[in-house]
Image (cartoon, rainbow, N blue to C red):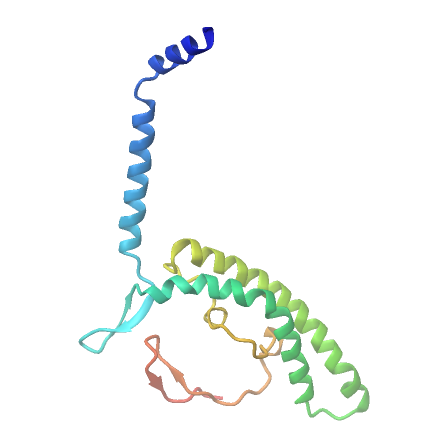
Length: 175
């Protein structure tokens, strides 16, 4: 019998606590909804032909796509290292034998480090709805094709057509 009395006394000691908690929750929810409503994440062409930022539903997919790509990145980067070694035209049999496994291991290691970055930025983009565009552009495109490891940036690559932020075509990149 004493236990119900204690609960009654405790309830009377802090009568407005429940109302305060619900007010705080309601205020937090309202702030989140209003903040998300004004979120800007994608580049689109407006009616005047200008490239401007606007939030789109595709912005919500940036983070999950980067997190899905992250686990495969070490393998994709290792295969990219082997492809770079295969395209190497330096003379010598020792280089031809040692270069592919070396670049595969180094590419896989760098891919592992980069996958942690993709996972973290993907998680950030997921939590913010793509507002900050933290994940690298390459991480947000789902794919399984080999990725050139970052340490072979000096390797020649064919010029590719590029576009501006809105996706409009521009002249090919300079080699």
